Amino acid sequence: MTIYTISLSFNNENFQCLVFECPPTDVTEEFDINENVVNVTNSTTRQSTCSSLSAPDNVSSLNLSSNALSPEAHKLLIEQQFPNIEISKIHNYSLCKSRGCSSFSSEENRRQSTLKEKFDHSWLNSNKLSYCQTTRLWNFTFIEGDGLYCVLCKKHDMKNPRNKSSVFSQEASKRFRKGTLYDHIKCQKHQDAKSSEVLNRVSVFQKEIEHKESVNQEILYQVFIPSSFLQRNQ
Image (cartoon, rainbow, N blue to C red):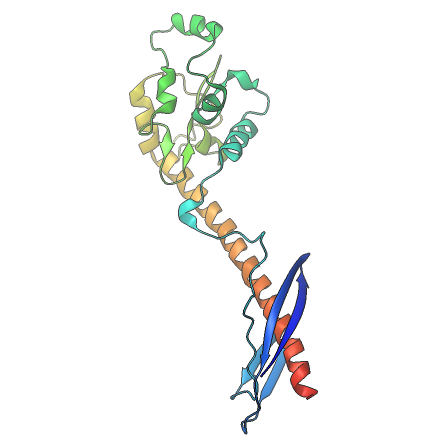
């Protein structure tokens, strides 16, 4: 048996594969190369395997269960939803955790002191209220001088299907009651936003799968072509 080392390059990634040439048999072989796909029909006179073949390092290991945003990506998402708001006036679990914030500014506290209902900053840190197990997002975001938004509904520009209200998405909610937050996460508008987010994640996931399959197919193509050449020239 003869062993060949083949060096491959794809998408600026380098690979080394081992091709094993086995003694010939009486069985014929046929290689059909069409549209970058190699089909081996019947039994082959030589068997080729790639013992050290691996996907490029930049092709991630895909797993929907771990498809949560990183803390940095989470903060970026929030900032993108409120591009014209001073960052210190934006309160969301991810932002507040990174800067050690646990309360509103003195200016916001004075503003709310005149209100009958006051927003409790700790609600933003509540797993039951703010965190979504499905999308893995901390939804509720409070803007000082304005009110409460849902990041997920704002991202997908959700409106109430009945009255077309944009409260929690494009308009801030001014009802600072814990029950209001519970009502929102159970409403149809929010459920539709969750569905849109899941579909969006699945779409990105599918594109990554297709890219990974394309990479693997191209690598296999580059492995079998040299192998076929060696066999035809023995």
